[in-house]
Image: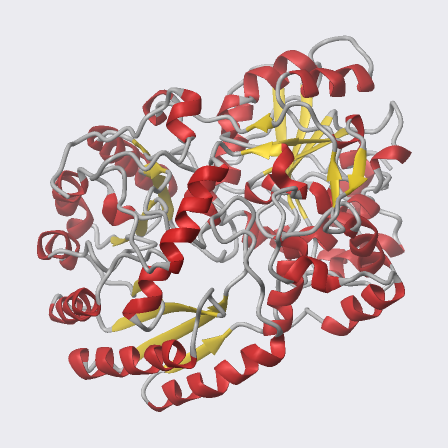
Length: 602
């Protein structure tokens, strides 16, 4: 079916009256980019989730505008429809289509899928099936688009290696010119994939596999595939003409990325190792981008985005310059991922005049001992001081993030979450306190990558202790069975591709990342049918021969082993921005260093 027929079906069939939130499917938003597709390289950017989730992702908007800045490229957006729309599309034999021109995505030259979380893997299977594109790479032919994938989960590509033609790890801006050059050549699909391999993409079909002594299926390689990094954020464009959705999205606000990377070295944090080193934009550039984005979007909230915004070295200047405009126009400002040890009086006062939103702090562990183990270098005194000041500065809503199931955790550590929350309540007297508790998942390429995952039975015992929190705060605890599947996929190998395929299509598992849609029984049935030994992926690993080792995110094994020793000794590793080099390997291997716009005291 061609795009004209899809457009007629969409607007003339009455389907939009039969589905929830029809604005998810029609495009045409303010600041959208639509080009004449003739003689253009056609690229589809797929976020394998709902529209309102994908449109809240900053990286997705960055890539959309970056690709479309090229005259000979037309990049369009692709999202997974909700179940009611999928049913309607199947009834009418409508394939998955792009949002800009309603073009069947199978007619594009290339589809780039963002891998942000493991539980979206079944969504990818559904999206390809709905698009009438063979799910397995081995079944595709010359007429099919090339399927590539990137994002943090691409650092362990093996569980979805059978579905993706080529994986890219690193900053997306670094590869756009290369893709333009390769896709513009008059060569075969296979030759283009070969060229992707030559410039640093991981193409699974070019590698043989073997089973190691631990039972993992691992790629056989002579050379690891290295991640690519942007050196200077000030030299890459950031979109100020951000698309303004017609419906409410998860993050409905103007966003400016102020820096990339974090060197705090929290030993559980995949993002901290994947995106390092720190690269800051200049204060003047952030101010310009902020004002321009607000003008071009009309939002009444501005978010200064990074992994740890309060670590930005020239934040005071940014807030000083923005404060009059924000105050005059009643625009609120949010500083996501706020660290509790850097929320000083000076910074708080700069945003106290604007319309207040809630503050989010992440102590992660309830006891000082366990915070030292995970390298969350903050004390209880610092936590209490900062929440007390937040109350005095006018905030009336606090979210606290903790984790259970961490390495070396004891019952006393879990009780510490209850006690710390109680103290925060006593100090602040704030009524609206929410405690969010997630379950530790050992992530590839982190110092804790080989630690064991606590089974649901053990987690439930810890949750019984946490229920005491409900006496003085709201408590939200992640489902341990959801976390189990996430851990399985996080540390999985190529053997799991068959599991993902069967769970998606035979059990109709879709939107598993949504708690209300997740059904553990679907996964359990297929795990048993395929005789998959989940313990292999969840227990403590005793080998360095790992499936994800093929990807080199530049963190050395020596550094990770040193971090494990420090964790066992409850020792801290300082942030190399303010202290000595930790020899993690990133700067040594790339010649890239932390880029700070202002030197500040530790």
